[in-house]
Image (cartoon, rainbow, N blue to C red; front, side, top):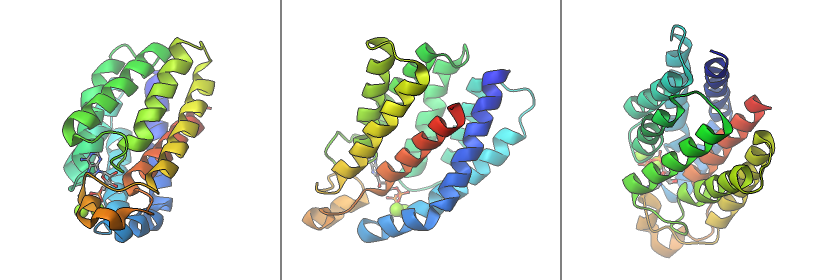
Length: 207
Ligand code: ADP
Ligand code: MG
Ligand code: MG
């Protein structure tokens, strides 16, 4: 169906963007982690793009589930289960396709799963710092402000961008960066950054 093709295009755009940002993500992770976030994400999303391209006449839910399963199986470390497992879990919200309502449900379920799995809150210097304001902004823009989906997504991207900047002056309390203690202060979180890139590509392909 039409929205499945759009989701396939989004997965391909994410794979390309992550590949283009691979060394930047690696640099960010080398400062406060183990320098594998760029490689992890590039491998996982390249495989995910291949896997969804091979699906025959899929629906949107199947595309997202397949991408998530692939990321989950290809990517080790913290980010594989957080991205992949949460995508698989949240894909159930797209059973009836992609609408503003199902997109909000998907975003909320994805965030809940990331928080469940990783046990991180806002302020722990993780992907949750970009994701949380983005999801809340998206939901409010759709449900309360009644904005068109594209405007809502653009506002969510802006919120994610602010969330990425918010990770810089704070101290990591979850993940590898937390081993550094106060030395993590002053560094931009790699997973928050890749979350922003993914959201930017969702906006690009939706526009
Ligand atoms: P690893 O740290 O295992 O090498 P990656 O480098 O691929 O995995 O991913 C690191 C990113 O994962 C961090 O920048 C952070 O955003 C995210 N992360 C790590 N631990 C958690 C957690 N408990 N909750 C949410 N996000 C986390
Ligand atoms: Mg790492
Ligand atoms: Mg690692």
